[in-house]
Image (cartoon, rainbow, N blue to C red; front, side):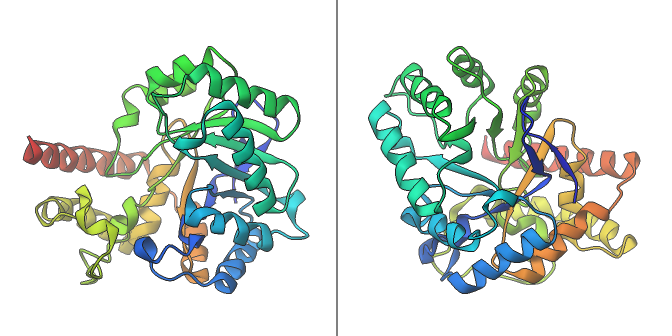
Length: 314
């Protein structure tokens, strides 16, 4: 495993973060979740050097937090826990109550990184950030983060207190943050933690190469990258990834992760799984060394595919 500092703090995070959305038992999103199996996956993550875990009060109405808290019994000091306050709970009193519920779910008396999950234009950012700073001053949280913030909104938030991490969507098929958010974070020593790092499964290759189809009711079926006409455009990128994977005795998803970790400004890639097998596969992605030429080829083809998808939507 590789590690880096969280923002400007002395807190160390692993460059792969275990994403806990799938542990929320929300069958309408990820299918039925097995608590015992998820606890084993968390233990396997710790054993293989992943120290950083990302959850939210909104994942299964707190169930994800509860499972993570149970899994980390006796190992709290080894883990960096990040959780998130929901959009509806950003008023001062609501935010404190939300954190108290999360602490109870997680069976801990502090959270290492506490995110604003989504911005809420109806609640003053000054009020939310003011309470975040109070919670930090009380030792209930060690660092503040924001998720799904634009560079301009992040800059506004910084006027009210220090932010150590930002969590945007980022992958070979979603690269908008390279324009302004990543440069801004580099300038201000803010860590970037990517979510949807393998594009909700598209970048595993199984939907293009393995013949897999989404089950009826799967939330991804209406998502942009899973639309039939867009999947046809994505095939060029998936085939290139497959070629590189074969040359390196790797999987397509490992190539996606290896590319992501090579990008300037990316601190950690959040990847969720309920499978110990897939978890170990993800960890091995750190051993894959993409050359500058290979990384550039992936970036170039990715840019072309994204531009082609964007032009279809106009």
